[in-house]
Length: 129
View 1 (cartoon, rainbow, N blue to C red):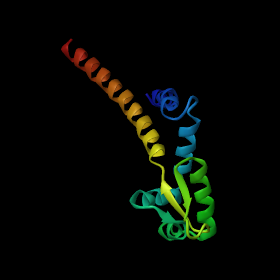
View 2 (view 1 turned 90 degrees about the vertical axis):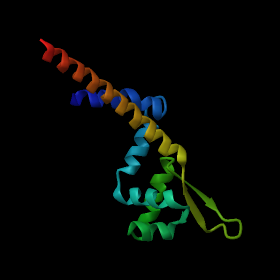
View 3 (view 1 turned 60 degrees about the vertical axis):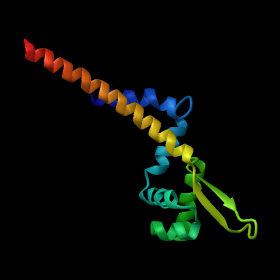
View 4 (view 1 turned 45 degrees about the vertical axis):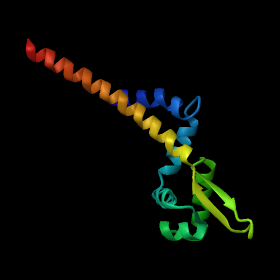
């Protein structure tokens, strides 16, 4: 069954993350870092500046800059510059990136639900013999 999980992920990744699944893979890879997960959690509550995100994630500003570049490249966050001061960047979570991950997870879950139903039916048939 472990092999099935890998096959399911590979088959379904394309549906939620581009033709070859590379977009989904980039999102998942970006989310693999605990500090970036804390950033996403903070941004899920409200848009924030980089300094506030660094404090929330417990990392230095230079490190936060690197994390934000990864999140921007993966399409997880977007940034805006204020009209009054273009030096101030406010980061926001991109809903689309979360939706893509959720859709992929839902597909994987549906596959496993189907497998469990088939296994249950098999066990019940064997029990009737």
